[in-house]
Length: 169
Image: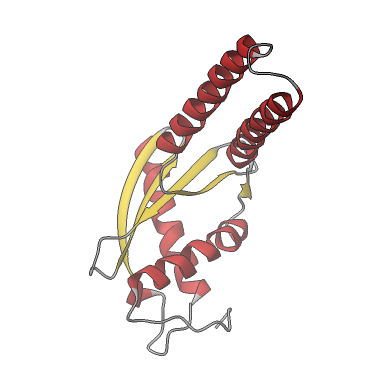
């Protein structure tokens, strides 16, 4: 067992959470380096909306509404525009748990989800603009006690990635 944290085998959500937490180390073992560009972009947009709202609050405290009416309208438009961009990014990257690149510069994106009451890890791998979906049963890489088997998951995930690579050729 490469991890000493025990997972509740009766909760599919806990199984998915543990698997998602181990994606980075498994893909690092396979030669991928995680990219945080989308996360940084979302944090920057979120921080920008807070700054706009904070500056508008300070302006409202210092000046009368009639004096800063045009600034208020402009700030509301900017705030709405930033939130629309953030919404669209979240919509495009829904369920994406990992974005990374290998040593050759090939981008890989992994999205995961689960269906209620189905003990399968549904994974969508985008590798070199090729999309492959697969379903890996949790009992293949969790033992009967609830420990995550990183080596087995690495093997199963590398098989899915190689399917994407073969489909691309």
